[in-house]
Length: 446
Image 1 (cartoon, rainbow, N blue to C red):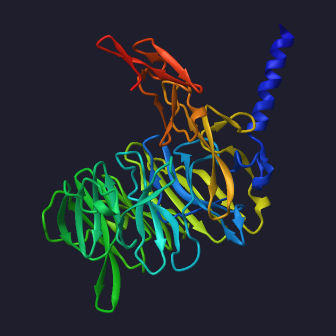
Image 2 (image 1 turned 45 degrees about the vertical axis):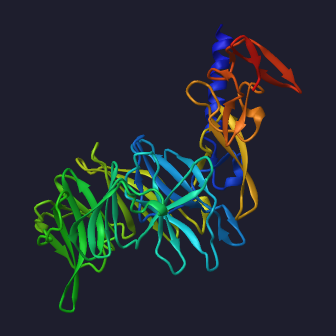
Image 3 (image 1 turned 120 degrees about the vertical axis):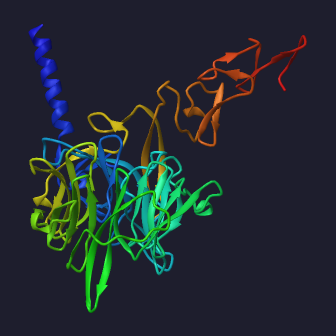
């Protein structure tokens, strides 16, 4: 018995060592099922807050290069709270339809609107060559990017359930429901409501029933940034006077709660009371590269992302005791050995070498690099297949088969895996079953 217990302890130890394998480059992990979690170069100007207790961001991997260019973007997540430094990242999905060069250039550059849409997706921002950036969503199964609308990034948006608040064309408006494709940028069943006439909104958030935003104010030859609080249900109202203003040439990002404004400039991250008393302004960080801020309304967390020449990071600051947790950081792009990470499984894969998938595995091709990579599609809660591209991947083939990436029953069969034939009259032809149904005493396979 002691020998068995000792063996179990040794086995657990070995598995933990494999799971926590240190790395500085991707090739030290079990590619393409796992990757080194220390090489993310974050699109830091905007990050997202998930309903699953995670912070989401888009990024490219420092070690994923082709023809001296960084490879594709990924949607990546990290936990909102951890006692560990660099607790590990998770790839949600790979974005495969970017065009890094030429007149059709488009490249992912952040998450729009802070919050998830009601369908669980995020707005992914794509910069365009000589055109306005695109805001759209990605289908995790097909990897297709669907453009919802185009908008200058200097004009902010904020997602609040089924509604979107945005600044566009010198106006602050609400759109309900949120547009999900370019063909429905103003859906017939949606309501677009003019709230205020504004200049560019350099930041926009909603707290309770209030909208909080910034805009540039020109006073003679001087340009300043004003901070505003307005009600969200106004109708073509005049903008009130700013609560306070700053003389910094740019405010990179804005967040808020019911008590404070939070904003970043080239001088760091600051907190100012909602009454605008700048004498009580507090500096929370000296980091000059903070481009995305989130204030989680369900906890005491303030989150920011920063990206600079030699690295990027995501940090949590506690709004009560001001303690700091580094959730992710990568420093040392010119000397990667200074930033040691651990091998992380690609999303939905598991096991001691990250090659296990509790579902179906499909191999897909990245058109930018012409390389293949695996995608694990987990089984649905009832144990059935969530995604397929071959008949054999369906749980009870040949009674079911793959159609448009879903397993469907052959005619006449039913049940969660198509195991029932109501007539119990099954005939076979070339390995394919037919459920012959009864109609007024006759059987038919039609």
